[in-house]
Length: 306
Image (cartoon, rainbow, N blue to C red; front, side, top):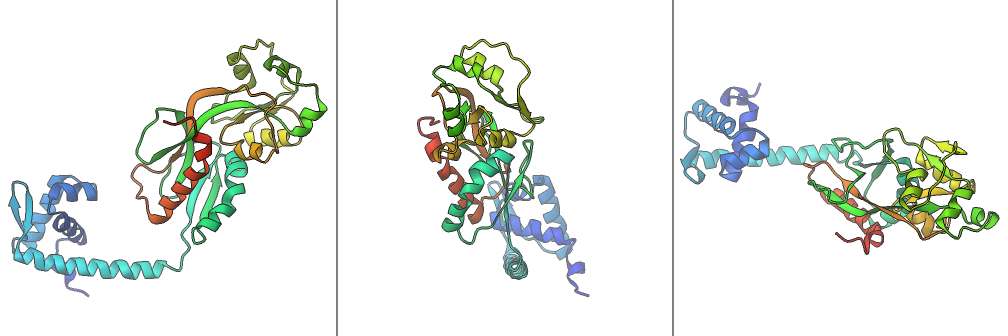
């Protein structure tokens, strides 16, 4: 059995020592290790007692390593690097996926049609797409997601994509086969497709029409879907008019799979934000994916600048 266990108070004391020696500051070491400064000081004192020698010279503006401290730091740093290299080698055979969580409609109609571009731009990047019917907080299993929040929303590791703009959409075939839509009032004479999301508040036809100044006696809707993705599929099939969102409908409109029968739109005052965990480290791959997603929405945000 290695004698190391008897030569140090605990393995954790080496991590504390390495951080303190690298920063030459107990406060910064505590912040990195997510512990208190007194906890770092106590751990260092315990290590010094166990080693029988002083490792740091305490000064008003920080600390300095003693000769014994420098000797130990060189050994610990070298040992940590060797262990890190070995662990990277062991894990290099496992594929690392970046996980992107999105609503079914965003995943199906905005992200998936563009993944071939991502593979062209970053052939070694691997992405896993998961769908969710609610807003989730990125964590150890979810790298990125999209939220709709107030346009002034701010938090670490969040990036504005575009404003939330809502407008009527339909298939070209529906527009050709039904009476002309010349004004917003004409919309009340057409079949309107309704979406109801259990966990996300989504603007409906009644609210949208009221906000553009159209009075309507809402009767029982012809079709209601509990997933907005189904609403879009019904619109694509020519079943009626749906409400479209700036991000979700962008590619469908660009490819003329859907069209806007009227230019009238509502800017809700909210916006789409790309979200990572507040404390997530933006590695090369994650940073590349963030930059790529923002580039794909750059045209949508033109004229909406913050």
